[in-house]
Length: 397
Image (cartoon, one colour):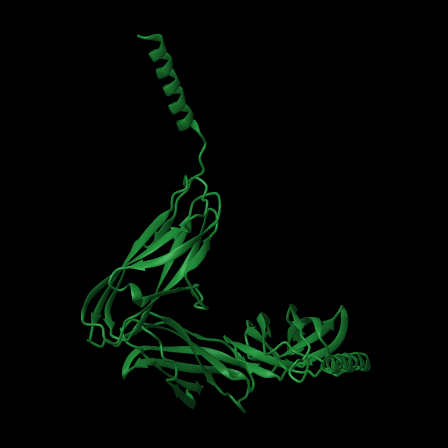
């Protein structure tokens, strides 16, 4: 063998070995489930499906969401809580991120099968460790069968009745899943009795539920004027006169103050112009996590430059058990500057953890006028006089 050829071959082998032995970080992306189907989709109907994006690599990165196919324009993406529409999400390292896919079938769609491909890929130009500059991509397919056959059906997932107190409404919670292809409004009927004697009957059908969605529906019975003791409630859930579930529950009406009051302030925000003299609406979302309805209101301290300048207090509202409702208060700033508002919810003698909110107030410029001081006025008159005198001298010449 030619010595030069032998050296070349050894070098090539060593180079291949070095490349093979180089440590690499796992790079990849996946989306699940890989295929989805919506059967018997009625024209004009709305449907929801969830996707999960997986990132096995050692570094987090952004991914974009795209669609292809005949039904691509029917699909929108949002965060899993449905708060806002999104086109890009952050995939954490060695983690996963859920995404909500919302499908709206057009009113003029013809009967038939439609397909869409959901494409999840890394952002072009963004460096992903281990990907060697390539764009990572994963796909999931969706098949939609559009029909004009209306199918009304539902399933009762749960019925929950908790104890209450004297003169505090009883909450009856029904977990209902719409298994049809049109919006369904289940009717919930509750018959309350004691010692075999019927006391009251309530019936309510106010909550529409979209296809494939599971909704928690709460019906309240006002037990005013009834004594403490053990009671029975028979709950019937029906849909278009078809009974889906019939169940009985026993509950207690307890003396006032017997049950635990518990709650938390889950969110805080504001609306309005941040301008001196203009009111700002403060809204806090209060979650009743206790076992009884509770009265709650917003309360807060307003600081400017580190000094306490005012306090706020909102109107008191009754928040039913199982519920999450907004509480409001108003504040009108009197001076410009940076403000800090420390706000909490006060309920039944208790307070939630405080949430801080910082904003900057601008001066009110709506009626701004510029008064003329004597100095500028005198200077302007002197200039006009000199200009006039100079012009007269030129005319005499």
